[in-house]
Amino acid sequence: MPSISSDARFLGVDLHALWRDIRSPWRGMHAWPVFSWLTPSAPVVLLHPGDGMSFWLGEEKQSKVAGPVKASFTAVELPEDFVLRRTLTLPPMAESDIANAGALEVRAISPFPEADLVWGYRAVDAPPGSFRIELALASRKQVGQYLAAQAGRLGGVSDPEVWVLGAHQRPIVLGGYGEGLRQAHALRWRRAGYGLLLSIALLVVAIAVTPTLQLRERALEAAQSYQDAARRTAPVVAKRDALMQSVEKLGTLSEVLSTRIEPMTVLNKLTQLLPDDTYLQSFRLQGTKVTIVGMTGNAAALMQVLGNEPGLREVRAPSAATRMGNSAKETFAIEFTLDSQVFGVVGGSPATATAAVAAASAVAAPVALAASSAASAATVTASGASAAASPLPSASSTPVVTTVPANAAPSGGAAFGGTVATFGGRSASPPAVSSSSPANRTKP
Image 1 (cartoon, rainbow, N blue to C red):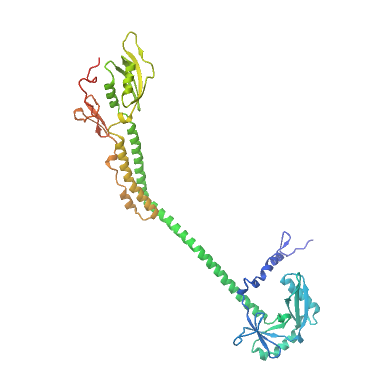
Image 2 (tube, helix red, strand yellow):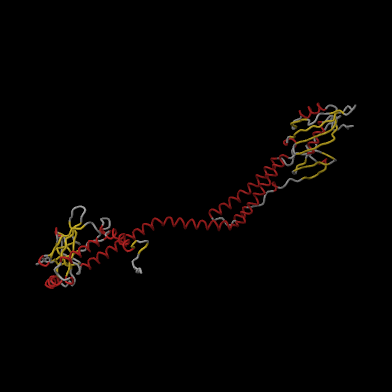
């Protein structure tokens, strides 16, 4: 029956070992030159055997000291008579593995019981591709006796460090004494340095992000102001839209009036142009196209007369003229196109309609400007914008068709049955016809 393992594994991978391998390269990050300044070296006074002493910053000996020595920590150098040394060459490995290998070697060569054993190690120069450490081990009992003998020099320090100077006068710290205090002190400084570094980074990020946040707040305020302005100016915008629709309708009406043909003017012109022997049986007006059917003595001469008349264009006969039996008359059908500038509505001329559209546009412009300014800057009130929407002038009113007596009509209109038809507020009176004109002669 397989046993239940408590190892943290995922897909056969030991998660503890994975985390250890990931963390191992970063464990000594504080010793990198770029981060080493975050962990300042603590001052240590080393008491040498005898009466000498030296001043150290961390594990670096200071040759000259200016002023009185003030150290936070005290260390005692163990005499050579109390120390056993051993140099061990290892392959490159992690720091934790080096410590384990050193502990294994010390237990193998130590003449002291394990409970009485104290030891330490330090890396020394080694050939490329290998790692060499210097081991130092001593008896805990003998170290305690030596520290008791140095109590007078310690000056009340209850927990000093115990050092052994190795190769190149580099200290080997024996574990189990006051080295933990210095390590804790270095850890506090390191954490404080990292905290300050993190605070600086956060401050720099805040400084970089603040303008963006301010712009965002301004954008939100501008959007809110725009919505408020749009809500306040909604009635004005509705009036402006209605006004613009009226302007468009006036423009359409202007186009219609500019191409509309006045039937009475056309009939009056035909009355003047047709010879006395010509009779019309049918008159059809479709837009600017006129079709007349009737009888005349000479259809070709009639077409020539109509073709030479200004305002009549594209004169043609859709069918040939025919003579009925022994009659002297020819039956004809003639089509031609009218010029709207000549036969258009006199009262609703394009100039009048254009003036009406221009007046309406001039009124619509202040309203549109007021609504746009209020929506963009949010400073125009609804009441002020409403005042800009004034009523349209009377010039934009729809053309009126009226009938007035013929004797009161001005010149230029067409009189039929004693009345004159006017379009757009201006009357069109018939032109003066001489007594010799064909229009005054009675046709048979």
